[in-house]
Amino acid sequence: MRLRILLFIPFFLLLTAWGFFGHRTINNTAIYALPEPLIHFYKAHANYLTEHSVDADKRRHMVEEEPVRHYLDADYYEQALPLDTIPHYWNQAIQCFSEDTIKAYGIGPWHLEKQVYFLQKAFSEKDIARILKLSADVGHYTADLHVPLHTSLNYNGQLTNQVGIHAFWESRLPELFAEDYSFFVGKAEYIPNINKAIWTAFEASVAARDSVLRFEKQLDSTFKGEKYAFEDRGKGLVKTYSKAYSKAYHEMLSGQVERRMQAAIKLLADLWYTAWVNAGSPDLGEAPKLAPPDSSELVSPKLGDHD
Ligand SMILES: [Zn+2]
Image 1 (tube, rainbow, N blue to C red):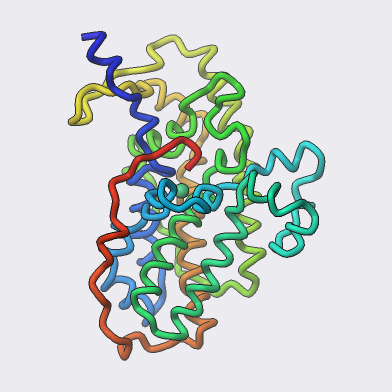
Image 2: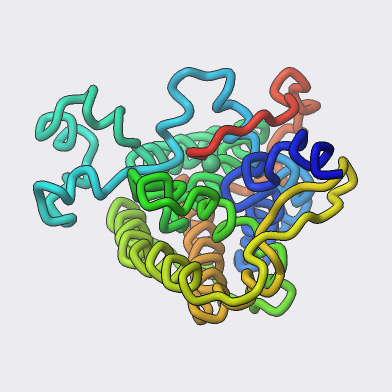
């Protein structure tokens, strides 16, 4: 039995950022925060937006530029500078540091902002296929921006002997406890300054990062029960954090995962809405019908760790 168990890859290495569950939930739930009339368009395409919420992670293994779009290792810069000195505008950032450096440590916030402008353009052109693709991707990158470990060189606890913490926080905890979360975030609001809203969200993730790592470290040294368990996931047994250990960690975080998910949902609804308003609030009822989805974009996920 032991041998058989060891043949399986640990569960936490198979997951995408926020897990499929988290990304699907964030994209889907944000739809219901939209005002009239935009909500009708998004509701009509809710399945697409949910199903394609993890396309950006699937592309990480096909598109060379993709991986760095999902994070920004703020602590690389923080070694030398206060966080708020990272230039928020791309052109300034690549002057301040080289483009190679910027790309080496992740471009998450800058890339998200660019996608929101592309979404605005797609709305202006009433290009339904582009609107949907970009809306799904904006959802993905917005969700990733809210994950504290997407701001760190120590993204999987590999520098502090906490390997696996990445998916523990963003996948295992929501999967176990999200049924008790509230996803009511109020109505989407217009964002006067998209760049500022994105960087504010990013800075909140940075602020949450230290407790993500420190609490797990504390728990690891004090927890009396079994830290890991083997669960049947339908493909054989996989190693994961035990329910008791997960519950104890979740309680130490006192609602942090729920708050980051709620913030992601709210910002996503705000970004979709703002892109549409900035495009002149087009009537999408007159837009041409959606072309069938491009099946070449659908590949089975093979996920690495820094997603
Ligand atoms: Zn991602």
